[in-house]
Image (cartoon, rainbow, N blue to C red; front, top):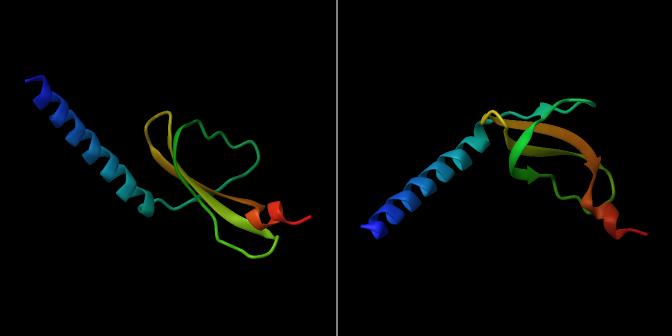
Length: 86
């Protein structure tokens, strides 16, 4: 009996995670501005374009806020290539 409950719970959790991941592609990122209140509960993804040289790029972060809403922001940062240059 307990095994059935665990199995049903695991399947339900997997379904919810799958739906949350499917929705991340549909959220349009809002440009971040200084002082913007984010109230991040959980980060779902962080993406940025791959660049071979050190430059300023636009990165995206998709997250769930403390109210349970799916949100995305875009922000400017130095590319990861800058970490490897002297």
